[in-house]
Length: 276
Image (cartoon, rainbow, N blue to C red):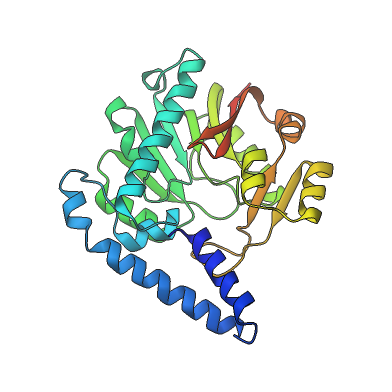
């Protein structure tokens, strides 16, 4: 069960037992999650025999919400294929790009499925534990820890392509614009950016309440504070965008080439940008 499923289970417990204190619910969630991680780790040796870059179960759960090795690998492969297909729509392919950045790489769920293209791959993330594992375990890319706010450690006009999965789905509006501006700085003219967001589909299946739906409809942007403890800073929440908002506000930083609904793992929307 992923982190969202655990949250719903905890909410169900609160509704069923209203006298249960919040601390008790969080303890139950922690114990349940710990058990899931321990059980998943029992199968790691079998999976690592044919997937040499498998992170430990606790790290998989920490950065992707699931400790299950099979799901971790399948989703990573699916997202890599989605990105490849999007490039194909533009008559482009991975060999066209010398330097590629995975912004918010976590423990390389996606990047490991791109190593065959022989690009100069870079990964950056705010999660020091994930980057430490990547630096020790991944031999085909370079990694760095970035701070919650810009700048990145890279020089200006450095990258030919940047992709970012499940980062702008968690930032408030100020952080969003700060990072769009920074990604513009580190990309070369005519570089491509593939950035995922929560669009209409995610808003629908995550069952926003009527007030949240109205705010998203009126403003085109909705940021909800995070529902509980986790490995990320307090500013990491749940963020939703409308297509109209993206075209109006993100076009101030990049030329928008495409907007692909459910373009990432049949769930998140993908915004395709070009550095002018």
